[in-house]
Length: 357
Ligand code: SF4
Image (tube, rainbow, N blue to C red; front, side, top):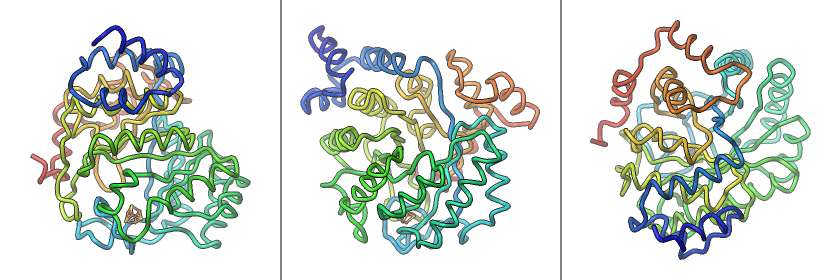
């Protein structure tokens, strides 16, 4: 990598002001990947040290969605064999929040399928947020779909820590992955959340046929929106979803994408999200030097690897966990629970990616 480019990355990357041209250069194969990771790691270490934040997802409502997002197993356009259900009971949600807190999660994410909540549903979620925060030492994030500024304000008043609403892809690519709502709709929800002081989590899905310009565009939108947290998903084509395959994802390209998001959003919590095991493969630990967050216990409609394998990866690479419970204790608990590790953990992914290999 040229010295001039390294200098630009450290100077403009620290402020997230990378030019479009330099951003595209990060994604191209012309720069050495380890040198890019080193430059990204300088920023990661500056803002987050060697700490990793663990998130646990809970689909509190699954499937039955009328929208046609082509990547989504819960969509009307999907025939994926997923379990569908309306909202879980309060008792079930509270129990899962307790388990998340005990499993070392810093944040518990309640995810709703569907286009957006009614006012009654927002009131219900507000009650749950208040109860969870009163009982457990854990942050709460809700992914409710499209919300109005008034609904966002009620969630904020209830004590919600973060609202998730993903951009998923770029404005110019959006029509190819969804026709029932627009990129603009997504921006409105994110702006509504920001306008009432909610911290915002907004992510992307890489590998849905978008070009490098689209990836740069997404990272710049999230910078300009002031996203506090950015889950970077690598598309997992579950059998039955409308979009049949992940396009252009190699482990090295996935690392370049993570680096790009770090350079353009140096202070954001960058998460190696769904598909990290499938697409980063043996390079997954290198992603920790760029991203500072990951999901434990799988994704919305796909399993991840075992807790034990993920925790072991963090420990082996010398990272610590941001949690009320120490990493060694969590490892011990995972072992006691008979969790599988290593290759056996990866084997467990297979039923969900039969059309991937
Ligand atoms: S991503 Fe959300 S809105 Fe789109 S189909 Fe899936 S559940 Fe529905």
